[in-house]
Image 1 (cartoon, rainbow, N blue to C red):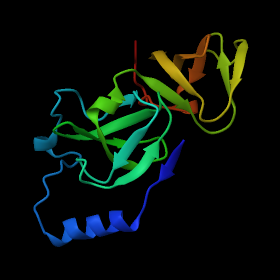
Image 2 (image 1 turned 120 degrees about the vertical axis):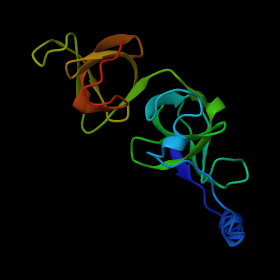
Image 3 (image 1 turned 60 degrees about the vertical axis):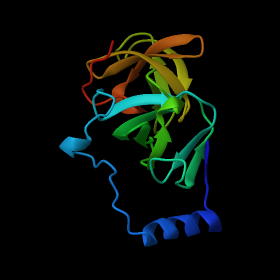
Image 4 (image 1 turned 180 degrees about the horizontal axis):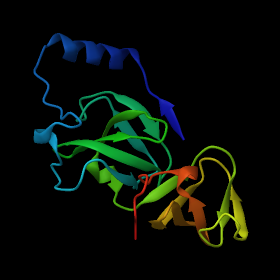
Length: 174
């Protein structure tokens, strides 16, 4: 799904940037001046538009690539914005910067924890449609009362909110 990118050149570039002692104007989470360059709410969930997404240590191509993701549709959370760059957090807590062109507004979720039951209705006693392995990605369709309807391949069903990442607690989504 992803791989860590660290090289001598990357370390040297970071050290060079640090030695310049240039003021950094990266937005900080909770900084009122940094709130949404795009006009969209922060934080918010989006997904990867591409099969290959470079996560950088800062908002620009001059910053080293820290991670390379290889999974289109992976949900991520935008936590800050700077010009055309978005600071994201993935489902494992890794943070970094990606260009906005690599992100889609399409909402997806990723199954977390153990194997989870996809159900026919938003009810723990309803029929099980499928067993979803951890890290399965589904398209988010609607959420209410602790359950979300998701689409996985050609199947549509309900999953408890606590069994996935990519939707906020108590979020109602249509």
